[in-house]
Length: 256
Image (cartoon, rainbow, N blue to C red; front, side, top):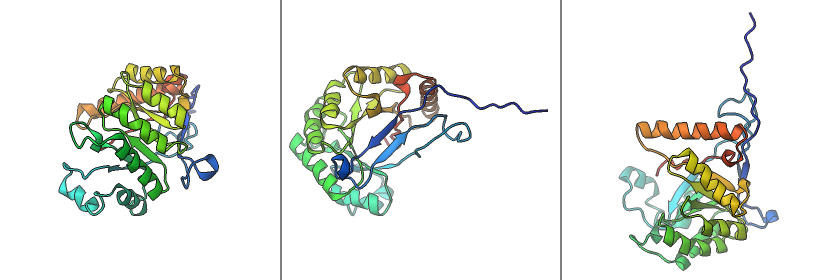
């Protein structure tokens, strides 16, 4: 008896998003990092092409972390008072694909650093290492809208990944990405409809779908994990099935 072919044929493939720009492309990175491009679900290599592997960004902060476990601190306490040295260690010792710089020191409820200081940190990190950079704000919408324009300007042409836009706060960051040539993280609260809506809002303002990476948020324990997986799976199936507003790579903020 013949075993029937169970391979699924999809109508669409996921967009390829390239982060970073080399000297020939107007930036200063030693290389670029591309994600996406899959024409099938994860791990099903027999069914379609998966041209780019998952990549890992290592996180650095613009301040010394105050709530990290001592075990984690034992690996980074020698450099965490200097974001440049921290970034170099992530690259040289741990082989990070990208660096994710979180500007948590700009939080109004914390150190409340200003735009000029944030931009100087971004500039120093870019000069201190050569791999592509993710620039993530402090999470306060008003403060992020204040500090990220300066950060975007000093990194113009580097094709950084900026984070993040939400359904209620997207216009400023979309404008920055269009003006300075960056990519964007589209964040949503583990909701498939809102995730799509954020992408619609960004593209309606003229941002290319190929410049967007979806961040559907994540749960840390139990049912939260399963729910996040199901949202990611539903979204990926929709994207492969032809929904252009779900045909973007997905970012997972594992340690958040």
